[in-house]
Image 1 (cartoon, protein in one colour):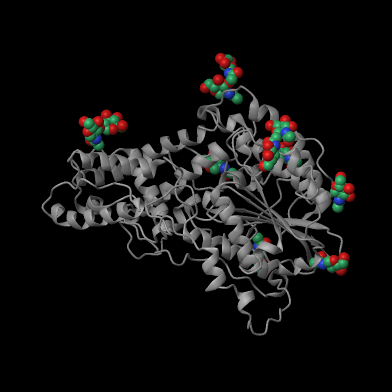
Image 2 (cartoon, helix red, strand yellow):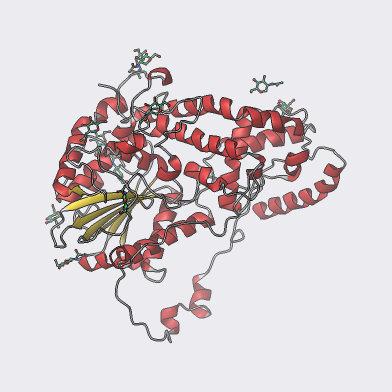
Length: 547
Ligand SMILES: *[C@@H]1O[C@H](CO)[C@@H](O)[C@H](O)[C@H]1NC(C)=O
Ligand SMILES: *[C@@H]1O[C@H](CO)[C@@H](O)[C@H](O)[C@H]1NC(C)=O
Ligand SMILES: *[C@@H]1O[C@H](CO)[C@@H](O)[C@H](O)[C@H]1NC(C)=O
Ligand SMILES: *[C@@H]1O[C@H](CO)[C@@H](O)[C@H](O)[C@H]1NC(C)=O
Ligand SMILES: *[C@@H]1O[C@H](CO)[C@@H](O)[C@H](O)[C@H]1NC(C)=O
Ligand SMILES: *[C@@H]1O[C@H](CO)[C@@H](O)[C@H](O)[C@H]1NC(C)=O
Ligand SMILES: *[C@@H]1O[C@H](CO)[C@@H](O)[C@H](O)[C@H]1NC(C)=O
Ligand SMILES: *[C@@H]1O[C@H](CO)[C@@H](O)[C@H](O)[C@H]1NC(C)=O
Ligand SMILES: *[C@@H]1O[C@H](CO)[C@@H](O)[C@H](O)[C@H]1NC(C)=O
Ligand SMILES: *[C@@H]1O[C@H](CO)[C@@H](O)[C@H](O)[C@H]1NC(C)=O
Ligand SMILES: *[C@@H]1O[C@H](CO)[C@@H](O)[C@H](O)[C@H]1NC(C)=O
């Protein structure tokens, strides 16, 4: 019962402290960690009780009529699709300066934001609905996991530890807008999905069934869908499947491939584990860029908030951690008192700090990034051309991808689950250059001609959809296009594709372009080369070391 009693004692302490704080004394438990685990320790559902008193539905019988309807295909049949908007049951936060105005703090959470539909990547008239005169023949779904707890040992937890240390020393007294910190405890776990994150993936599964369910008719066997071994990745994939097939039948309706995600294992859905330059100073360019910008945009917040924590050294890193706590607490607990400590300008600054982190660490400005994305592109070409991969020279895994059971080439619906930083690597690997058209991101101000927004690329439950189409309708695909979080991507950066108001590219030109990208990206050098690169000379926009 350890967890439970720890939780109770934190609650009791919090009640006791309210009185103490009003007398302006420090609370000794502020910033302490509280956790809880259910079911109670040692308690599990037992087979004997299930068999005797809680039989399953098939044993009980009396299910009533169960006729199935036809499959849906709303991308083809509906006059318009419904955008993903809002994030029930999370509470929409306010800013400190613009209470109740139109600015929405959630729109500045970048990769910590719930996915909401992107309006446009420049093709204003295109939507996920398939263009007039075309038929959908196949769909690719590459999605991120849902909302999660912070990475183990990252800034939210270390901020809590600093507060707790000061509280233990009897020097922690918070006043004014920060008074809540006197009774604040750290209630977040690490790494795994939150209940809201599970909802997101369930909804993505439902949405995919309603939009593309008709393609199930062209499976001759069961689907094989892929994820990685991390808890939140498996949980996300299963919730997707539960949404897509329903909880009573998803386990028997498809095969879930779980690829090991661990340093040294080849896995195109976790390619950084097979790319040394994704784990050294080269990948550190992103956090360097963020630190530089934090020292610009958080200075005012530091001046404003420090007086409310007398005797506590409120650093720029602390302020960044406090901002980070707002999305993480909200997606886990439904609400966070940290959100409205910051102004609209500071929230825009926060979004930009994450844009910088991705651009220089996991996006077009990092020389080892296209290399990380290219393995998935090789798999895409194999699937589009129905040609098995025979040369394993990137992060592809011979054991899994060289096997036509674990890597079928001919599925009408492909589903791959991955991470934010992998989606952000696959985009430059595929040469979606319009996302990088604004050029390298400055470290001292937010540029006006911004084309790179992590909010639109890798929010929680982000999805990149590939539609293989025939125009005019037939059984032979003629075109392909890509839709990122409901916004159609221009393919003008891909040789042979050109401009199209619906983002269409002729399929053979697209495949030729991808093959050319595979030649252009030097996986061995960009990932394994011993080179130096610094922010001062980092002007790349293609995620590759300059030739
Ligand atoms: C979208 O359609 C409108 C009306 O047909 C047209 O005026 C506009 O130029 C189109 N925009 C793009 C980006 O094609
Ligand atoms: C599925 O396959 C059948 C037979 O090959 C074909 O007639 C039909 O158009 C295909 N459906 C889709 C959605 O591609
Ligand atoms: C609390 O006291 C310890 C021991 O003196 C010191 O190392 C630590 O920095 C103090 N923490 C804070 C936040 O003041
Ligand atoms: C390929 O993946 C399998 C299963 O995840 C793993 O056992 C194997 O070690 C991987 N191979 C390489 C070369 O990483
Ligand atoms: C506050 O923290 C910053 C950053 O760690 C450090 O540079 C500075 O010396 C500290 N100031 C005081 C008064 O401890
Ligand atoms: C694993 O990836 C490396 C490149 O990092 C590649 O050289 C090797 O052939 C791959 N091995 C397998 C078994 O896929
Ligand atoms: C899968 O591979 C096996 C062994 O190489 C082969 O016999 C079989 O025909 C392949 N199946 C398909 C559908 O390609
Ligand atoms: C964006 O603006 C910067 C200066 O603010 C300029 O150097 C750059 O060329 C612009 N890029 C585009 C694509 O307009
Ligand atoms: C990718 O984009 C670059 C420009 O950044 C261009 O030089 C290259 O030819 C493009 N490659 C393909 C295959 O489209
Ligand atoms: C990389 O090169 C530098 C000198 O250019 C050398 O000192 C260092 O040991 C090399 N690192 C590796 C991992 O080979
Ligand atoms: C970038 O600058 C560093 C020194 O800051 C230098 O060592 C490196 O060779 C430069 N890289 C490129 C690609 O110019």
